[in-house]
Amino acid sequence: MPARLIDGSAHARAIREEIRLAVSRLPAGRRPPSITVIQVGDDPASTVYVRNKHRAAEATGFRSAILQLPASTSQVDLLERIRALGRDPDVDGILVQMPLPDGLDANEALEAIPPSKDVDGLHPYNAGRLAQGNPTFVPATPLGVLELLRRERIDPTGRHAVVVGRSRLVGRPLALLLLQNHATVTICHSQTVDLPAITRTADILVAATGRPGLITGDHVKPGAVVMDVGITRDPVTNRLVGDLERPTVDPVASAVTPVPGGVGPMTVAMLLVNTLRAYRQRPGQA
Image (cartoon, rainbow, N blue to C red; front, side, top):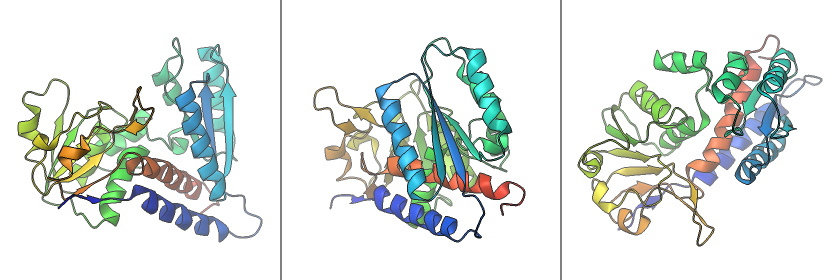
C-alpha cells in the first residue's frame, strides 16, 4: 500500500495555535515576543520566505518587523544594524535572511547576532552547544523534522537514521539531534560512494540536498520513514518539488513528508518556538 503522508501543515498549525494561546495568556501590560528579520536585497524567493515568517509571527501575537536593506548595503552598515538590534531590549529574536548578496560575509553577519537572540541557531556558540549535546537554539528546519517525528510518535531510539546532506543549516544539526535522541546516525553527501546501498539500511531516511528526484524507490528500505527536506522550484512547471521521486518511493516507504506541506511549514513554526523561548529566557519575561 502507498506510504502514509505526514501532514506537516496540520502539525504546524497546531504548534502555532499553542504559541498563540501562550502569548494570549501573558499578564496584562507585558509586551509580546518580538522578532526582526533582516533582508538585504530583493531576491524573490527570500521575499516570499520573509513575508511568510512575518505573517505567521503576527498571527500568533508576536511583534514582527522586517528590516529591508538595499543590495548595495555595506558589510559595516549591515553589522551595525545587527548590533543595534542586539542592543534593543524589545527585540527577542534576530534573523538574517540568507543568501546575502555577493560581497557580504554571511559568517560575520551571523556572528554579530547575540547568541541569546539567535533564533535561527546559526551562531557558532549555539552550534557548539548543539555539538556538545546541550543545545540552546537549534536551526528551525532540523528542529521541525524532529518535532514531526515526535508528534507522529516515531521514536528514533535504536533506529538507523541516514541523513543525505551535510549543510550547516540542516544536515549537520539534524544528525546531531538524531544522535542525541539515541538513533544510530550516518551522514551521506555528494562524495558518498554507492549512496543507495547506504540509504537502503535506513529506518529513518532524511533527504536534504535540494536535488529534485535524487532519492528513488531503489534508495529506500521497505517500511522506512522518509523525510523530504529538499525544496526546489521546477523550471518547467513552476511547482515546488522535493528530493524524492515520489512515484517510486511511495510504494516502498511506510510514511513520507510531501513537498510542499511537509517539513516546510514546520520550519516557520519552529522559528516561532525558538523566538518564544528567547523571550522567556530574558529577565522578567518568564
